[in-house]
Image 1 (tube, rainbow, N blue to C red):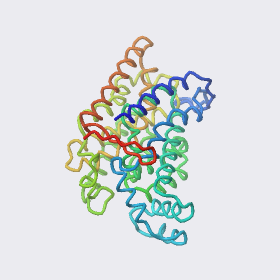
Image 2: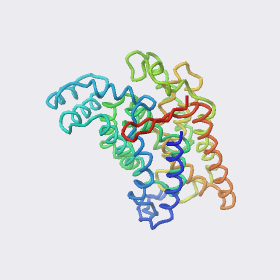
Image 3: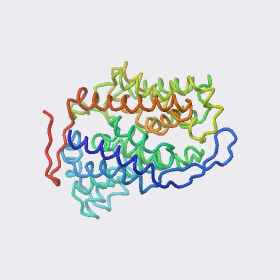
Image 4: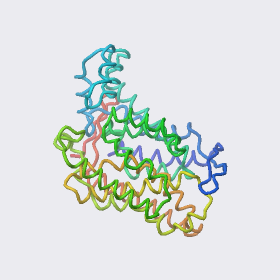
Length: 378
């Protein structure tokens, strides 16, 4: 666990320092009037510095969580660069992912060490860019990323998280209803991990007004329909046999995860009159709907026999909570209330970090041959 505490403490401290440095001005449309409004944001360099430690250790790991499966997959991958066009056109499980491995092995002469570092840098860069671009409270958003243990996706489930990050790259285009770049990104991500198809059920309805009857019915219908579809047949999917091979695989969704994901939607619903009267970036309303969709999937995952499958889907939407919760605390409450709630939130997320890492998982292992680190909790 020592490595993950280093990541936690470093990210928390550096994010506070970066958040208090000079910020750049970013122009967004306002939600109601659609007038352009200036907002202050942390620059990308500060974001990369904040997530450096999480990226560094993710890139240097070896048999952490399901990493041994990816090492074996990398080492056993055959083919040449000339095979890539045929692979991309095939009906293989993850043709783009396979093509990247072949290119790294044959053209760049990478071992799995360099390949892990490449993926870790891509994921760290994408998350940093997303939070820097959209968060009004960078340090709180960064704290949530480590305290919710979302950063562990960079160590476990990296193929799915790569698909998540491909879509994150075009979130600004998505928010602006530029559908072609967004759908291209979803198509490419699908060639990495098929679970990204979850976006198809929500990408238009998320733009509707939050908490309207039409929006809620559409979200509920999409959650139920996709859950039934993906639970119908596990054979041949990206999750078949996953639990048996990975000790860190989800065994379903627990009530604490549901409660964590339910917080932003609950606050937004209770304070909806205040929120809708606020001058706010246009993407806040979209993030509210995506947050509601995430908790809906988690609720289904908690009660479903296929919790391992459904419980891993909310990650496509839940990263919006890292932007949404800080904004809600700062804008849906008075300053004295917001200050108290923020302190409670910091403490609650810290408790969740302890609960998840020590109680749910019994401690998280870390092993790196390149760094000479071998830390095991069992």
